[in-house]
Image (cartoon, rainbow, N blue to C red; front, side):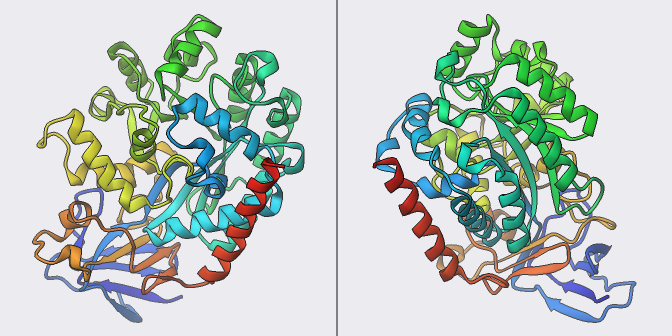
Length: 452
């Protein structure tokens, strides 16, 4: 085993108010010491990594993504549309997904996120046409190729247009097929406990694409296997109106009616909740994945982050799908989070430290993990280092604040479980040019299939 001192960073954020201003010591895949200001390690170390030109952070955690959507970025048919018309334009394209396309999309999206300092990604895959019934298997292999942690959420859609839902029939499955595959992938891929590289969660897509019966059955199955639950909720007024028209309930009432108002649940977006609903979500300690860029692009609204936190809900950050972002850059998402929250709250009510917390320890809480998301003894060695040697940082005085305010976008070095996955701003085990070539070919093929 190698013991490494990441020495004397320009600044350090631990997410827990502990002092590691002179760096951290890592042995194998675990942090074994925080080195305070003016101190040297108490433990023996084999090598030193000079971090004096970089800001040191816990690896960032993306709590909601749709990696397959990297294939349909800036697609003309979906531009300048609200959520429902946007989905209706894209569903017929996504219905043609093939395994090799998903593999390419997953690898590229994870690589892009790694380069932005993101070490753990929760992906919500809910498109399972006949040609892609083993999507989770494809993604698990792609994640192993790239080397980052993933929470793969086995999504589902069962409520097609014929049943009054939004998706086309070619993209939905019946409840029995969905539940059987959910149980299979949990057994095959879920790693419980600290240090897990792959975890599974179950994730019916949204109220407008699954039945109440499937929501209830999925909750029972997830709790039997002790995995978490995820879905979209409260993203737009249209979604709220759909819930009222179909179920006679507002979204949080619907959530409670199907057994989902619980601390093992996290929601994507969570924008359009009233005060009483926020109180109930907080009391249940439900998690909310705040997706600022996506919410801005689709003009969905602004998540009420401060009220949710005050009520007891956990708030984390997320990039969301690359067709509604249209990128996969977690560090850029922190800046967007700060700016969009300044439209709702005063400048002294949400700071750069808040968004750093949401993207690290806050996001870890959403995923039910206490082994990642912070720099502390015994935690996983997931590390992101950002240099400030670009023109945009010239003249900045607070290195930690400058990361957010001056718009950092790419990490210099990234470690996952003690292994360097990015060095000198480049992927250490993946050829980026080859990755892009494969991905562009898949994207062209997918869109051409939809226009035949």
